[in-house]
Image (tube, rainbow, N blue to C red; front, side, top):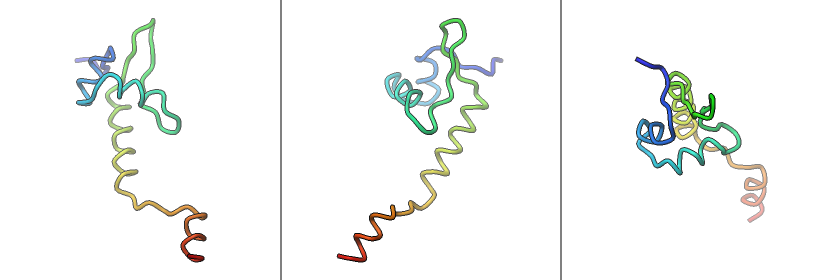
Length: 77
């Protein structure tokens, strides 16, 4: 069994999302979807995907810290 998912369609199926969403997440700044190309074929390592999904879960569960500007505005208002 391969440790890689190939093609945008295969990646989208593995994530249960659209191909468009996967391409967007691969281009986003910060923590993009960990895809890479080999000979023009896009690949996603399943171990890298699990690590990425874990970081996304932690980010969504972690309480959001308000920005410093928001705190100042709340104190004044």
